Image (cartoon, rainbow, N blue to C red):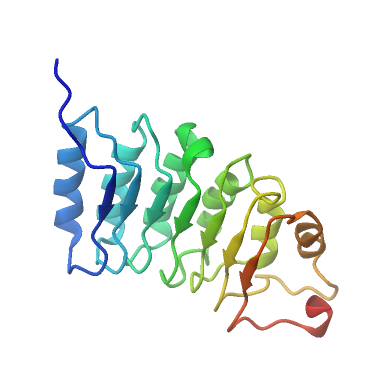
Length: 203
């Protein structure tokens, strides 16, 4: 069987795509088992949970994984996140291939207990160097607790603007934050803009 030619980078940011496009794209990718796709950027398109979940089913069996995934501003909620996060965890290729992950500006996506599925992936050894969870209602203390066990030593860029320090009331500085910065040897950029922090946390 001859191998069909396939692109490696698919860049379709802000092109007015809807959920039905994601379903058709999934079908096309599934029909090409030899696809060499390693970068997918569908940011600022209204794919919604159904569209992202459909793509996740393809990625679950993608033999090469991805090195770059951008689903920022795609109307993704905690429901679609569960399927995506389970895919990232179940396909072991992603732990060794995914270096850039952007799920930012999906409002309240990480504001429920379902966020634990993403934290589970991030808490296992992986090769992420650029992570953007800005504007997702991410609990920073929970995230740091996961990153310490995942990609902390080689993470270079971390964007967490417009989130919350914790979903629970903390009277003392968060130990996960102190541990994270003590281990983040490669970190060169971090963004906490729009995130309320106590003086203790800042110190």
